[in-house]
Length: 169
Image (cartoon, helix red, strand yellow):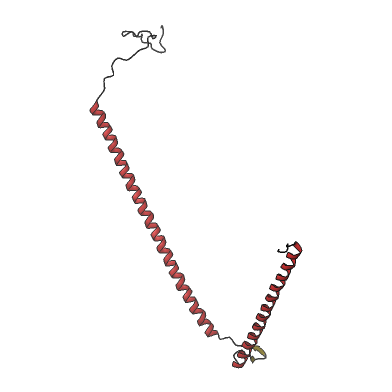
């Protein structure tokens, strides 16, 4: 039968595993540090052997003179390249905007044409309806029905004309 695992035994196992992993990590970092230090020393030796990093003493100051011509040429080349890239980008943007404007104009023209076509169709429909009404003419309506409760209208009933603001004089 397997042993029952308790909280205490689980925690001891976890601590042991954690210790192993941290030990491995510290070994790796120590090796990396040693490697970095060794490469830094090797680079230092190479630079000092070539003599390119040795400072020149001029007027009691330790410094290496700047090569201004080379720096200016380098930066001019970079500026020219950046300027060319920016011009190309600006050209692309202007082309894109022109394309957008042209497509918008085309859409507007199409919409105007559609509106014109719709208006013409509506005019045709109205004309057809008028033609149908004229062909049919006035339909006879027949007798109008009256309510049985309303008094009869007198055909010859006329009221006397009255004029406003006139009286006996």
